[in-house]
Length: 144
Image 1 (tube, one colour):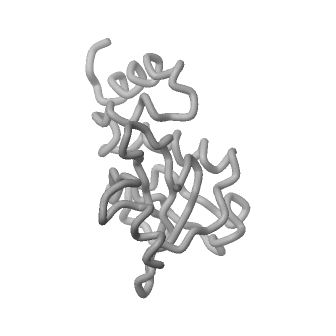
Image 2: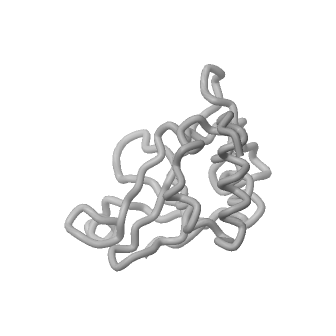
């Protein structure tokens, strides 16, 4: 079972590194994940990671691709647990806490996440959800 900050590859050629950025919740263990790819410009540029952020994998500037974010779950025939058991998911070392926070903070600069209120209750500290909602709405130009 993947948890907040865990990382993995899919067992396919040239898989990107995927990162779990929310705490799995509900009976099915639903979570949000994003991937990282080499930074080449032309992306959102919201969160650029360097080798110091995740030395287990990153060896050059790499961008978190929030536009590829996925909601996934642990249960079911296509869930994380089933794919892990089948060898289709390859776990990697978890993100350092500072890197996880950097990736989560990047959500608030991403166009995709500006209206993604469903993520907020699952962040590391759900007590700040109201403050985060306010910041997202302010960034999106919604009068608060």
